[in-house]
Image (cartoon, rainbow, N blue to C red; front, top):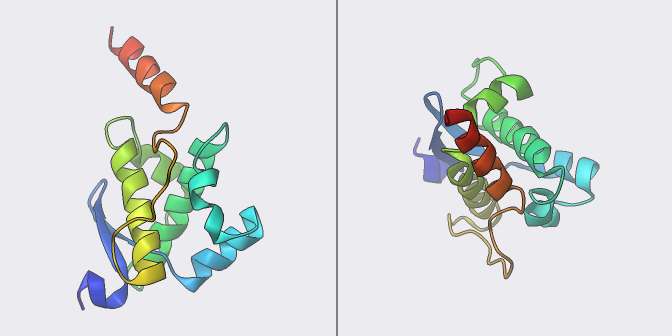
Length: 130
């Protein structure tokens, strides 16, 4: 079955995996954040990184093939780095759009897409290379 037909969105991290924004994910988001409509808001601010890792773990586990071992947040955290951070965030929005409307076009956001902490993360990564 293709990714479009089953609602899964492919993403390459350590290997090709799939994101699935299912009703289970929406339910979990409602419990944790009060609603799935707060997606952009929850990926910003001081808890944005934690929320991104939590949500990506949920989406990857929902999109996994039957019988595939469930990932932990620590395992997923190792797959995200400054080199793919924006790609991961974009994939999350595409998975949300696909699950919500059947298209991979993310919802429009009037605010700047880059979280306020992203510049600091880039500086820290660069400092580690010097």
